[in-house]
Length: 466
Image 1 (cartoon, rainbow, N blue to C red):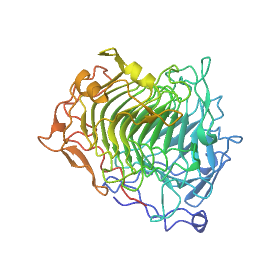
Image 2: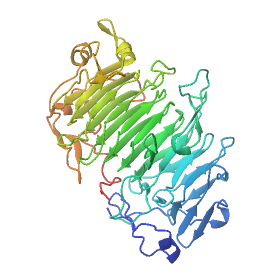
Image 3: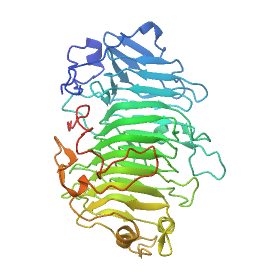
Image 4: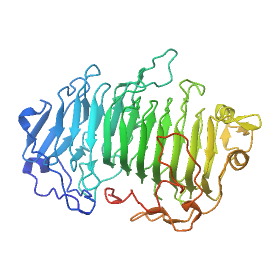
């Protein structure tokens, strides 16, 4: 696919440092220019010159006028851009084929505040792309902040409900009492070179769902070359499908704070130069028993580590009291282990005596790492080892059902330039899926995140390193 060449932009656009960028059009050569931008209808925080529009809106001067970003313009996020005022609805609509740049010099980022919406509905032949303002070839992880969506769905961590919290990076307030809250739609959206680090404990992710409710639609989302996590859920109830995370330098799918949504068709590919865990799953670091407890349901997940890299930790790290029901996953190539379960509360809710509790289950899953199940890697405050109360291997392979420790037989999962995550014909992953009772999930016979007959990870995605 060929990215749109920005070399013909006006002198002003070049002065803003806009990249000569490329945008995958799925091979069709089609770019959607539904309607030219009517600059007379834009908010005062948006200024356009030629083919470039600068968007400058802070927490104290948010955009409260609904507007549309169209594909005939290039949109530059200057500093923190806040949509909505937390009291009324403001809608940001983004047309298919539109490119939005986070200005590297000011760490541009986009926050959708509570009560407002983002309607970003791209297409396979015209994805919406959020990327770095730096020139192609100079882009890197963390060039800009990323996307933050704040909702009014429940989160944990407060003494009394409804609980509210403050997002990292000064991204605003999230949380509330509405599990059905609707923050809009993200469909066929790519987020590249985002996740700027402010401090070691205060970082942007490529995209953060903070207290986002189940009324929000998320389908076909690619998080590429993020400096922190690819996608992180801070509480909330939002569900997602078709999530691809590639080349991140920390965790890829991360949850904490009481997330209880669902996810299906998730693919993670870690690169050899950076990274941490495929999934890092927490309930609450300060109170492992906090309610509402993190308890997502996941099906058809593929987690590809970098087996020759010391940066590759665990495929799944389940800790701090999280619950989860995970089925039909592939976990392969992680340097430390495919699966690690940590902390007493997590063990407690996983197993009741000699039987499963039902709060933490893993079924129909293939593990293929040098060490599949990690034991006794924790330390207490005095640096003394903490002994796991029972065998993680026995929990997975005996109590749970349908799990296997074999090579899944994927086509080209370690190819970083043109990966193919599909199970090869006749391979272990081509069959053996267990049934998922929730009708939200698409029934499959294969294991992992990609249908052997339909590779959804191609066409609208990118694997460019810079």
